[in-house]
Image (cartoon, rainbow, N blue to C red; front, side):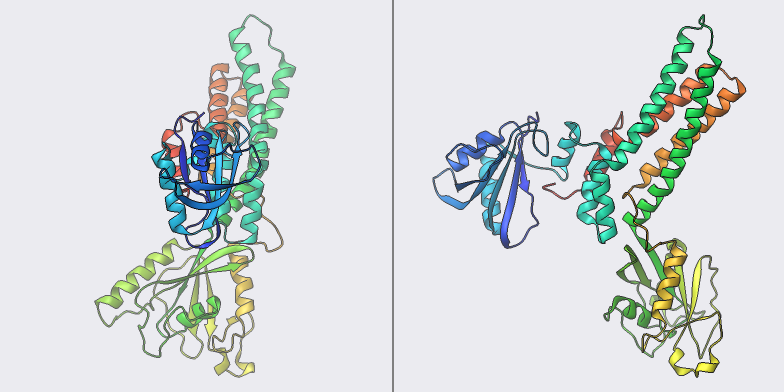
Amino acid sequence: MNKRTIIAPATAPGRGGISVIRMSGTDARKISEEMCGQRVEVSRLKKCNIKSSDGLTLDSGMVVFFESPNSYTGDDVVEFHCHGNPTIVDLVVEEALRLGAVVAEPGEFTKTAFLNDKIDLAQAESVADLIHAQSKSAVVAANSSLSGDFSKKINLLIDGVINARVFIEANIDFPEEEIDEKSFSVINSDLCKYRDEINDLLSVVKGGVRLREGYSVAIIGPPNAGKSSLLNLLAREDVAITSETPGTTRDLVRTSVNLGGVVVEFIDTAGVRENPADLIEAEGISRSKEVIRKSNLSILVQDVTDQRDFDFELTDHITVLNKSDLLQGDSLEKGRLYLSCTSGEGVEDLLKVILSKLGVDEGVETAYLSRKRHVVSLQGAKLLIEETVVSLNEGQALELVAENLRSAHHMLGDILRPMSADDLLGEIFSEFCIGK
């Protein structure tokens, strides 16, 4: 049980009908009963008048007690449900601090749950992902990870690698025993199966990383082609200033749009031309080029009546010809992408091409929200298992095989419960909000 008794608001700051204040630790029950002047009941909301040390009523609300280990953190947990007034919340927290509680650090409740084996690290990460999810697909995927579906797959792989380790290390420890070639063949076959399962899981996890982090798409092109107008059209509001004067956009303008269940950040950039009007425009052009390099995709916008060379090397990009409303229908060439930011005609076709280029399948739900560290660990484990299979096939020393399997075991274990995790845990839980 946590010797620190921590407290923090569990609901977002601001005014509302109800605010929830969470307290967890050894003295949670004792402190709450002193504040309420009565015994709190297990798993049952009970009305209470929350009072200060001088007997003044701070609020009339509800209190509930979750006894260890049957709580979110695994420690004793008390929740105060009070009126949604920031002043009341502050007074309740201050009273608990006076009685010995301390303010929780960001993510400390969930970190405590992890340390108490209530959840593994992948599930803990999915708590933060669920809070920050910006689309239905992200919410569903985060809940899948939180429920333990992803962790179950990793645990099955770990169990398989452990079985292989036990067999190999037993043959190292007892060299006088005759080697069972049939058993070695079974182990080799199992390892090939684990490698293939990791490979399949990697494709899902990479999709989860993209869903969690979203995509960035740079809107680029020469001045006055309609880049800012396109951004406003995609955002469905005027987020960027538009003008007939070339070089209006000096700084980067960003807006996020939910497309096909994923969040896509569109970035309006300064028009790129050889002779900028001043140093500010030149700096805007420099920033535009940097955004192009970092984005997942670029949309090159050209004025259909005044197409110009775009003097910058592009890799993955879409060219769209804007101001198509100024052309006659028979002037449109087949196979080219036309758009009118004035009428909106052609925007649906453009969105379909964007999703296709990004590799987003609107009909497929991503199984889990994932992080880059999951990808790194899975890739490392896959490589080590591949090396193990080669070593077995070539009859190399079993000590080398055992070392590769040990490392693969650690790689997979790092996803759920790192063996040396202080720095990693600090980095992960620092992303959480206070109260979670």
